[in-house]
Length: 107
Image (cartoon, rainbow, N blue to C red; front, side, top):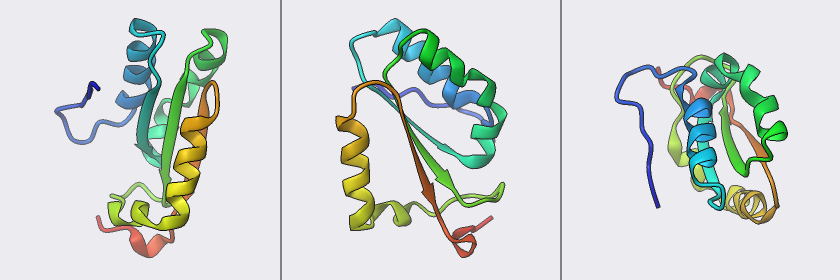
């Protein structure tokens, strides 16, 4: 397992491009990319690359409808674990949109 992490804060737009590079460099690997909705909007134009290059990138989108920081404990909910397993078991690319209530915003 390899982790590719931005050292800067905020890293808006870094994640999807990095996932694409990681997937292209390791075509047999399944790449899981975790991002917030604000950063995802900054790299939306990269999505067609997943299809045209047939990349296996799993996107876990933490969506609080706000450019704020997301509380990770929301991800530990049991119903979300099943959705994550479905995402991992599905062939090809996959977008799992995890919608959080706005009160989960902490920034």
